[in-house]
Length: 524
Ligand code: ADP
Image 1 (cartoon, helix red, strand yellow):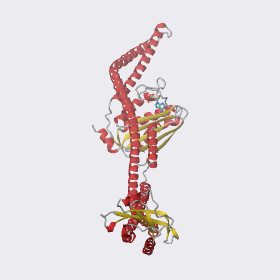
Image 2 (cartoon, protein in one colour):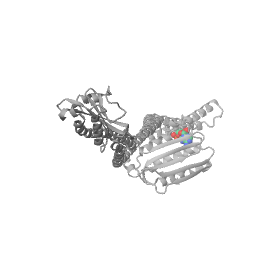
Image 3 (cartoon, protein in one colour):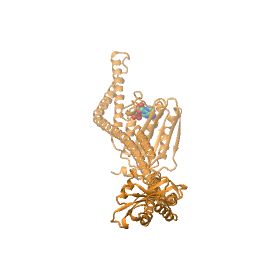
């Protein structure tokens, strides 16, 4: 993986970890929201219930107080006013009041005149005639309104003024009208105290009941909703996993695609370079063949003329053999014969090279046929084995059992194999093992020839298929073997690959298409 791909992949993993951390936990938020809503609703309900209940207790007490005040008014306001304290009428009134109140939950009564003065009370601690200034409820009641108030933590006592307990009390101010007629003048105001402790004490129990009921209902509701939300949560989670997996897959594909594109680009570059190299070889070959063709005729006449001159000079030399050897004339003619022989020999060498070059450019007329490449390899080995033995080289061969046939010109391919093996033998000065392996890979017959010779330098490697490129001594190599081999293999739709390390050896691979591929390549 390239550095950029690695960085991208790393960033993606970081992002994934971040996403996992920030994953929305639906269940947790749902539970928190439910609990909050439940607490708020229950609190509001309880507070509302408490205040409403208090109001109803007060109104209920007020409704009790009004008829009592109306019933007591004619007794109290005899003649339109309250008797003076200490008078027998007052004592009688007090006795009647207490008698009246005894069975009721009212425990205290005050009566005010229209000036707001207390004119009667069951409370011995209060003085008759006392004013109650700043009492807003009294003022409102004197204006004709019934006013009440609920007080908690008040002292409750009985009519004998004995404290009973601390409790909740409702005080109601009821205005009384002359003759009980609401439209008539106000004679005074009754302030009636009622003990509502029992009713009020029931409130916490009822509130607790409400809390329990609402909590119970909410637990049931929460459980039902929880099951629904959990189902949704599981669906969302599995979908999220599917999406995350898909995202990971897409990213993986992207990385793989990137790698494939890189790999393809590299292969393309190599193919392009190989193609350029092949084209160069073809161009050089064509050029060389053209030059060879042009040289062939003049060279023929040079050789012919040289041979004629040589024949003539040799005859002349033998004709004068009686002449004293050592004379200037004899030595001169002898020198001439030797020069002509050298010219003839070099011209023959040139002719050989030119013939090779012409061969190089000419397509063989030999027919192709199905050949077993393994057999062909073994036949080629037989040809070079004596030379190899002489050089102390052992040939090791391995040929796949089931090699498909190849559609080739056997002579040409044998020439290629022999040429490459000859080069290998020439490179292995110290002897050793020359390995030959024939295998079938993806409809391609691969012939691999590996030597442990002196190798090919990096500078020479791109040039070895060029015509006339040779590192061999003059007279030992023409530099045409590999270029001819290259042309032959290319003509067969194949390829020659080479790798080499100086001092370690070289490997040549001949690739030839097998089966139908080979026939298709051969057809025009
Ligand atoms: P020649 O054998 O006449 O030199 P070739 O075209 O067959 O011509 O080979 C060209 C050159 O490639 C050789 O001179 C040699 O330098 C190099 N060469 C080819 N095969 C090998 C090999 N197996 N080991 C080392 N060098 C090699």
